[in-house]
Length: 218
Ligand code: SF4
Image (cartoon, rainbow, N blue to C red; front, side, top):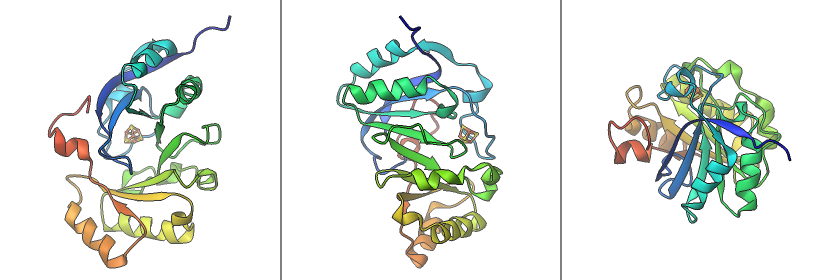
């Protein structure tokens, strides 16, 4: 018998999906440890500063079965750094679950099953990580997938707008613009979006509005 895969897990929590076109739905989150990026605005440094807990795949499936009607989101950190994420996605899909994968955009999504909804960051310049993006991912997206721009400034917004035009992103996936709270006033981003009528959706982090000041487990 093959060894059971083990994943390094930062946290598991049941919450409200907060930042995608699924925002508002109940969702079980598996937050995997480790990240290969260092974004300027990162609010999840614990995912790479702490090792996380080694967790067998079967324990995650047992946890998923406790919430049979919820979405399941696999996030990080950067979940694609762990080989165990692939059997996890396969097993969840085989169990008939709706699976979302949030990934930082620096690693290829080639091996991610088509059925998984991929929420792929395109890191804007103020993150300091724009040069790390794997733009080959843009050709691998399906219409149910999402591209997320986390915007800190007008320069970031202009960059996102240019990327949308240059790569015809609205034809490839759903587009999300999300302001960095504390750096960019959401209403200002809303004004820019309305003025340009970009084919993108403004997204506020619903979980941070619901549970203000809570940094983990939401
Ligand atoms: S990709 Fe996410 S977890 Fe990694 S440094 Fe950036 S914001 Fe933090």
